[in-house]
Image (cartoon, rainbow, N blue to C red; front, side, top):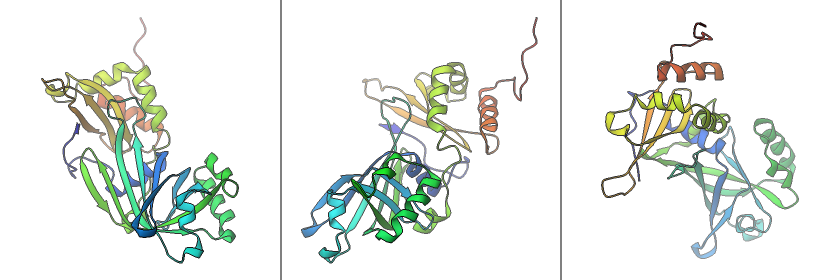
Length: 270
């Protein structure tokens, strides 16, 4: 079980729509559930998913999958579908799921005349090896959204499609995995210093880097109750101001940790 305080504007953080966009951008695990004949639900693991600027979501699925066959024009219906996206932590945490995103809407085939341009657009934003399978073993489908929900340690919250369209992923979404792994494996001293900013009761647990964005860093504190059951807590430590590049991110983390050697300063040699 993971605990956290409710979302509050008092702590600078990404908007809920930005959280959804970031989770969709970095997550590789997604399942498409399609409502078929007689309300039967068929699921398909997607090879890739991509949120377009319009708010539609393009997914790639195997040619012989239930999702692909459900959109055949011969069926004469437009199936309802839900894409479940799992945002996993980059580190091997006791509870690895950071968030779940549910994108619901209607599923449509992508016309053959639009596929090449669509593949080029997706590749320009985020090249993905699964794009090479389209037209061979995979097919592109378009999910036209009607509702968006995200659930994490702070609860579940809906996001309007308009908010999703207007939002962008956090600038550090792509580098986050490598950055957090490097922080834990090579900078235990910084993690220990950050943990000293936590309430005293949380310092007795194992503190792990959970996430980072332009507004701050999130830590996971893995603890146990007196009876031995898990009692994990997520805590956000905000930066003094939003950051926009890797150099600024490094300075902000060191400032949070109380490091006096910032902006290239070094200790005086003896």
